[in-house]
Amino acid sequence: MTRETVRALAVSEEEAEQAVRASETRGMPLAELLALPAAVDLVTAGRAWGFGRTKSHELARAGEFPCPVRRIGNTYRVTRADLLRSLGIDPLQVLEIPQISAPGSSGVEAVA
View 1 (spheres, one colour):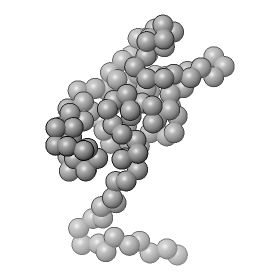
View 2: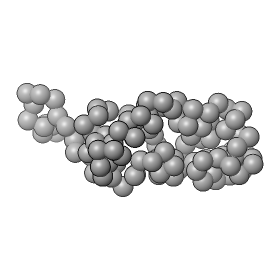
View 3: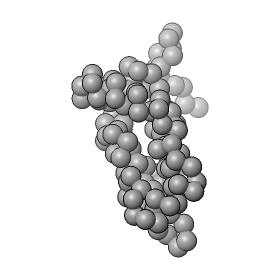
């Protein structure tokens, strides 16, 4: 994920820089965050915040995890949208990222 793509997601230049800094200082790069599935386990969500397994579970049990956590059976799950919002990334703007093709290609893929 390039800084230009991050800037396209943000409303202002300041928000873009904050998002880049946040993704660089936490445990998961922005490109990896944007590639997450619709729901992730608590350890993955905690890693996005820079927490380890134990800290993530402690916070979830205390109801203090930085985003909503759903308990399903004996496991915790976090939706991608809630995780992104808690990190200051608007999940709706993420959906609007234009696809950038490699230099020299037409941007259209042939389908067999």
